[in-house]
Length: 222
Image (cartoon, rainbow, N blue to C red):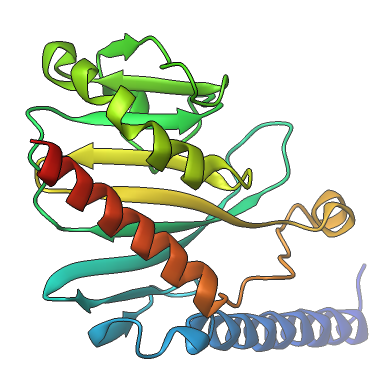
């Protein structure tokens, strides 16, 4: 039989583990809340929100247009290290008569994207990355626009970090790879650990600027 002393030791061990979990979780929440620290002033009337231990969202305006910055740790991809994505959503109305999405190397695990729910796959235009897949809901409206987008797509994907360009009449969203988890830490713990999850201001500014440039070009073209 297990004596009272053993029960006491087990209880103490459980309490210690609980305290360590709470401590580490509190530290992680505080760290993640600070990831947008360098981005102060990029958006007007910016508000930071955070759900539990998730990465936060920063929402505000740029030139009167609502913009949301969101960090997402993607741990769903099979046989790949977790990736930290920056999702930039710009609610700038765009003069397009359909919805289209360009994604680099989709594997149907991109739960944060509507890519695989769009019905039609279009041929990848000349000059675009070979591993870019384009899907849309109205090919007759979207296909004529694609060649015009070549400079934007090439600029966004040129560094190998641009993942997705989603465009709809109400706005657009860009997905950009910020970092990849340390391999050793993830293999040992199955938890991601990112070295560069405090966002660089110039990088964020660049992604926002690319989104606004794309919207302006589409509105000018149409």
